[in-house]
Amino acid sequence: MSTSFDRAAALLKAFKGDTFVSGFGVLGEAGTLCARLGKRAVLIRDTFPGSDAYADEIARSLKQAGVEVVKQVAGAAPNAPLEDLQRLTQELVETQPDCIVSFGGGSTIDCAKAAEVLRTLGGSIEEYFGMGLVTAKLKATGKALTPHLAIQSASSSAAHLTKYSNITDVHVGQKKLIVDEAIVPQVSLFDYAVTLDSPRSLTADGALDGMAHCLEVYYGATGKSNFEWVEKVALEGIGLVAEYLPRVVKDPHDKEARAGLGYATDLGGYSIMLGGTNGAHLTSFSLVDILSHGRACALMNPYYTVFYSPAVQTQLAKVLELLPTNERPSEGRPLAEAVARGIVELEQRVGNPVKLEEVPGFTREHIDRALTAAKNPQLRMKLENMPVPMKPEQVDDFMGPVLEAGANGDLGGIRLMS
Picture (cartoon, rainbow, N blue to C red):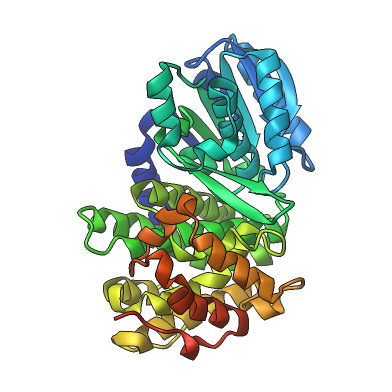
C-alpha cells in the first residue's frame, strides 16, 4: 500500500471505525455487518454488467450470517427520480423488513434512504427537503428508521457514508436534498474491485464528484474550528483524484488507480460530513437534464473558485500544488484564476466539458433555473455554506456573473463581493 493509501485508510478509520469496511475483495463481509442490524432484509440493488454475481455474493454472505433476504428489488435510475422513490417506498411498506441492504451507486443508496423515511414517517418527500427535518419528525413521533447497510458500487458520491439524499423531479429538471444525521447508514461497505469494469464516463463523473466534495468543503472551512482536520482530509482526496483519475481513464483495469479513486471519493464523503458543499453543488441541481452530477460540479467549480478568491487564499495555495499546472502566482485573484485553470486542465485530460456552451442541450433557461433554485429556502444551506456567504437578494447580481462565466468560459467576467 502506498503512503497516500496508508494516510487515506487511517483517516477513514478515524471517521467510521469498525462500521465501514473497504478495500479489494471485501464484499463477502456484508453478512457480518448486516447481522448487527436485523434478520430480515430487503436487498435494493442496481443492475449493471456483472452485478448479478455481486448480488449473489452479497446474498450468500447474508444467508451465512443468518440474515434472510425476503426480497430483491431494483434500485433507482440516475439522479434518484421521484418515480423510483415512490416504487421503493411501496416495496418497503409491503415487505416490512427489519433491516435494509442497498447495493449500488449514489442514486440507489440515496433513494433507499429517502424511501425508508417515507415508509416510517409518511407524508410527502417535500416535507423533508432541507436540514434536520427527518430528525425533528422522528423526535416528535417517537419513531425510528429501519437500520441500513449501504454497499457502494462506484467511486462517486459516497452516499454509503453520508447524511445526504438527493432526489430529482425529472419532469422539471430539478434536484432537491435531504440533509439529516438520521439517514446515515448504520454500517457500510465498499469493495473497490466492483469498480474495475466501471465505464470511463461513470468513473470520471464519480471521481470529479468526490473531488468537488473535498474542494467545496475545504473552501467553506475558512474560520472554522476544524479547519486543520478538514484540510488534511480534503487535500488527501483532491491529490488522489488528480493523480489517479487520468490513470484510470487511460487503463480502467489499473487496480492501484482504482483503489486510489475509491479512497479519494470515500474521503469526499468524509469531507461532506465535516462541512457542507456550496455553489457548484447548488448549481448542479439545475443541470440534471444535461449533465451528470459530478461533471456539473466539476464544470462549475473553477468559476466559483474565482468568486471565492478573497476568502480562500490559504486553500488556493495548497490546492494549486496538486493540480496539473506550472502556474505559481502567490496571491489574490491571479492565484484563484491559476487554480481555476488547473482544474480545467484536469477536466480536459479526462474528457469533461469545461463550459456550459460545450454541453448539448444547454440553454439560457438553465441559468434562469439555477438562479431561481438558489433563492429556494430548501436549498438555503448551500448559499450559507459559501466561503463568501450570499443572501437570496444578492443572487442575481453575484451568482449571475458566475453562471455566465460557466457558460462562456470567461473568468474575467466574475464579480467579487467586497
